[in-house]
Amino acid sequence: MATPRRSKGWAAARLSGPVLGLSLILFATTVEVAGATTNSPTLSQAKKDLLVLKDMPKGWTSSPAGKNNNTTPGAAQLASCMGIPVSVIKADPPTVYSRNFSSKDQQLTVQDNVSIYPSAKAAQADFDTFSNPKTPACLTAHSNGPGRAQMESETGAGKGLGTVDVSREPAANFASHTSNYVMFFPINSSENTLNVQFTVVDFVKGNEEQTVGFTSFDSQFPASLSRRLTSLADGRL
Image (cartoon, rainbow, N blue to C red; front, side, top):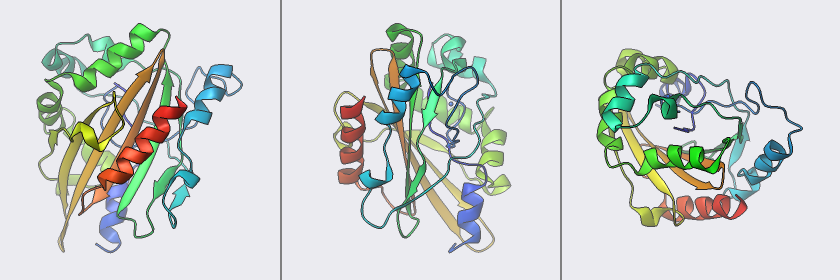
């Protein structure tokens, strides 16, 4: 299940400042995937589908992507909960990633990736995990169970990570024919609590799957912006 991920330590950096396949939820970022070549026409076109800095509001900045971690602890258990083959969660298709985009106040971030599957059927199988009615409950259980240690490590939150809750955003907040889930979790330090909301929006066309991640800190990501950005991305795919 394609999932944007953030560079390791991103939440820890936020706390020290002013305050998933399905392998959890923490944007990684690599422009190339093992086995893929950058001169592949398919991947070259996929790069053109990605969101870029000029798509963001005025004053936003970008930073390089970090390194990808594509492991999923408890993959078999998660697949069983969702009622899908474990191969869907463990799929690792060639993928290209955008840069990380951040608002001027660092309260909002966006990241985008496009994966190229061997067939439209395989891409659709991954997309179906997003619309699966079992997904929010299964991801909640996984994030607080088998996947928790990895999440604590990759967020840099350690034992300060609070209970993770996964639900869905209204479909109207995004482009049509997309599916989504939203993950909410607090990160507690000795001085304050940082509330993180991470929304993953997914859509497919043929054998290509595009996944856009929106993160907001102590705030709600603006629906008008998420709708505009997913519409832009969808129009390019």
